[in-house]
Structure formats: C-alpha cells, structure tokens
Amino acid sequence: PIKINTGFKSMLRMKKLPFVFILKVQVALLGLNGYCQALEIRHIKPASQIDQRNQYYLGLLSMALEKTRALEGEFQLIESKVVMPQGRALKELEKSSSLDIVWSMSTIEREEKLLPIRIPLLKGLLGYRVFIVRNEDNDKFKNIENLTQLKSLVAGQGHDWPDTLILKANDLPVVTSPSYGGLFEMLNNLRFDYFPRGIQEPWAEVASHAGMNIVVEDTLMLKYRAPIYFFVNVNNTALADRLERGLRLAINDGSFDEHFYTSPVNRSVFASGKMKGRKIFQLENPLLSAKTPLDDETLWFNDSELKN
Image (cartoon, rainbow, N blue to C red):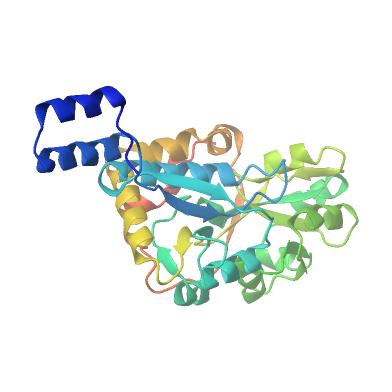
C-alpha cells in the first residue's frame, strides 16, 4: 500500500481535492519510492576466488543494461550460488532453471540451443592463443617452426570447451579435464605439454599459481576465429533485444572499445604481451556459425594494431 504522511492526508481532507488528483499523487509517489521491481539477471559464479575472468564480462553486461535503463528500467545482477562447469551452465541456461545469461565461445550447436547476441565481447581476442608450459620445457617450444612439429606435443583443455574440438579438428593431440583448476595441476604433473590460453589470460593465471613450475611461452601463437557472445534462453527475447541495443549503443559512443582497451587484463596484453613477434599458426574453426558477423570490422580486433 502507498503510505502518505499524516500532514499530507490532512491537507487532502481540508482541501477536499478530487479523487483523480489523489490517484495521480499516489502514482507519483509509487515511482518516487521505487515500487517498480528491478529486472533480476542470474549469472555464473567465478571458478575460484582467484579467477578474475568474469569481471570483464560483468562490466560489459552492466554497461549494456545501464545504457538501456532509462527506457527499460532498473536491473540487478545476481551471482549463482554454486560454481558450474561450462557445460552445466549452458544446460542450466537452456532449461532457464538457475541462470539467465552465460558468456561463452560460440558454436553452431550452442547457437541452435540458445539465443546468442552476436557481438563478440572480446572482439575475437580469445582466438589468439598462447601457451602456459613447464619452465624446463620453454626452450623446446622456441625450436618449433611449424604446425607439424607442434603436433608432436599434447595440449590440455577443458573437456567441454569448444577449443578442444577446434584443436582436434586441426589434428592437434589434446588431453582434457572437467576442472579448470585441475588443468594447471595436470600440466605441472607432466600429463600434457602445453595449455593454450586466450592472449589476455595466462599471465594472471601463472601469477596466481606461483607455487607451480609454469611460465608463459613467448614465441608461439595459435590463431582462429573465436567470438565470445552473451547467450540467453531461447524464450528470453526481451533480454536479448535489450542487451543488443545496449551493446550497440556502447559501440557507437565508444564506451565498448574504451572498456576493451583499458580493461586491466587487456591493457597489460597490449603493453607487454609480445603478440607481434610470435610465430603464428592459423587454425580453422569448424564450429563457427554461418551467421557470425565476420564482415563487420567494427566488432573485431585488428591485427594491424599490434605494436609489440
């Protein structure tokens, strides 16, 4: 019920104002006192306290919602209560049981089961893959000159990551794990030879596993098209439309690129990631949808911008 202070109610009795006016006052007070319910959006929980990968995507999610807030209302982001492997998170989103949004690399299958917002959140940067390796193996990788030589070594990846299928489709041997954290243990314990990571990921990951004998290899890089999209349930077209409008507004006013280039992780890559001098092995991505906006240059990172 609407609460009106005693003095104001007395004034209404004294003036004997018409009912229509009183109704308008109540409606105004309703808006001022925040009775309109905020849109709740449930998202994934980080894999651990040291996992900071979510922060970039949550920043873009908040940006898109904020740019549409004046017309479409308030919002509240709610973190999932439990950590979910990527495969489970996508299944939960498909059922719309505990999640409203997931950010993930796109595949044809995912775009068929879920509703993608086809704006690459990392401008395709995740498709630039460098390796975490054991320190004693670093020189071995420096001597690799071509993809055929790399095929003699074994990569490690998540069992439900699209990257696993991409590597296998390009005849690169892969060992998998259901656990993100477990992959670091497996590398350290000689279960595979290298852990390909998106160019913005490995330095922070190595630093957060300082007790392990691992380093970022600095001479090689894999490259393939790998857009990360926001995905929502196929029936949640209202949220998908709002997010696309918000992201487009952010692209047009420059705030999307500002977030991309000034994000602490991305900024450190462009400053010292040694991307330009690496030997690049181009891979095909057979999981890429025909609807991928490859021709829209505003959505993708441009190699010509590399300075180091």
